[in-house]
Amino acid sequence: MTAKTVLIVDDEAPIREMIAVALEMADYHVLEADNAQTAHAMIVDHQPDLVLLDWMMPGTSGIELARRLKREEATAELPLIMLTAKSEEDNKIQGLESGADDYITKPFSPRELVARLKAVLRRSTPHGVEDPVEVDGLILDPVSHRVSVDGKSLEVGPTEYRLLQFFMTHQERAYTRGQLLDQVWGGNVYVEERTVDVHIRRLRKALGDPYQQLIQTVRGTGYRFSAKG
Image (cartoon, rainbow, N blue to C red; front, top):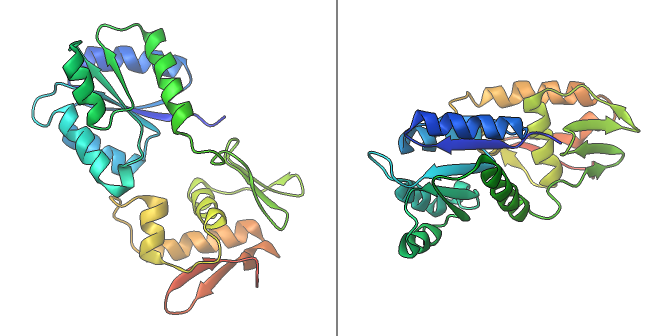
């Protein structure tokens, strides 16, 4: 199983460290931010699977960041767990109304946190997202991050893998280089559009014949993944 990425947003370093240790022991990949602005940039760049968000932070509060994330289309479905020292019922309601999926009151045990986090991730993984995708014998397995043909693994780099996964789950539609950059690299990454061509070339080479022909160049637009030839 590929490790899920969790972003911890808390202005108190000892709390971030305590949570990070607990999550790493449970085989999660951890990112950290100490304020809402840094957190937002990291969410756009790294696209974590879940955010643990402290309610009370200097500057932009966790609640404000949660509302912003839920308003923006790219992050509206991102699972959020609020961390707070406030246990009053109205605060809990306010946290959940801001779009948080769960709410944990400090102090909490690392075991409780990991259990709640697993539950939220289970609920938020859309059905079918972890199912293998197959096109004409080419199989992409999102759980093991493997691409194979007739049971034989292909050597595919991480960017080429994400590109192929996007194509295989969005077939028969032409995408511009800009759209592919947004979908595969993330909207906050400053990459030349020609970089897409480089990775398309690498992906075609990794797939080899006849599968490289599935990735079609659409003149004046960009690229399309199609099994129709």
